Length: 174
Figure 1 (cartoon, rainbow, N blue to C red):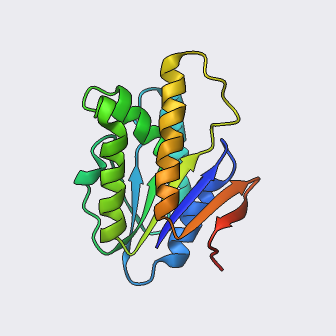
Figure 2: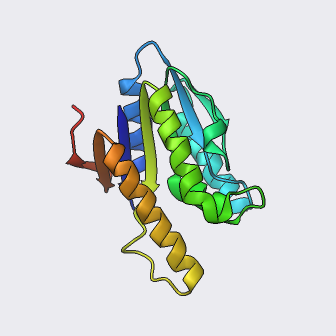
């Protein structure tokens, strides 16, 4: 099953995704694919906070800043967090795919979708919050929207988390 979870900043989407992964996983392992690159104090604090949230839930953590298609997660429940970080890494990091970011990310998502028992993808809802101040930012927002759209087509469930409340737009999880 593929689940796309979106929401604004600090909406509760991470906690919901983690709890969903625990709920959906049976005997298979749980893998957390972390995409946030630790580039400063703020990101290091956020990474630490997310590690604390996952503590005791049985996740194996794999860091993947670029090259999602190279991750091996056979027969597991995977929580991929977060699409907005992965896209930024693919666009702007030296080892990133640059103008091939969309294709690189979707190849990785398709591979994970075939290999995993459950694939839960967290993405940010940035389209109402940010006014693009330059063409680079506009392109980033456009690409994130396109990625979310393509994942949404593949997904069995699409859920938006608002104030820690899941709102289902496609499918449902009981």
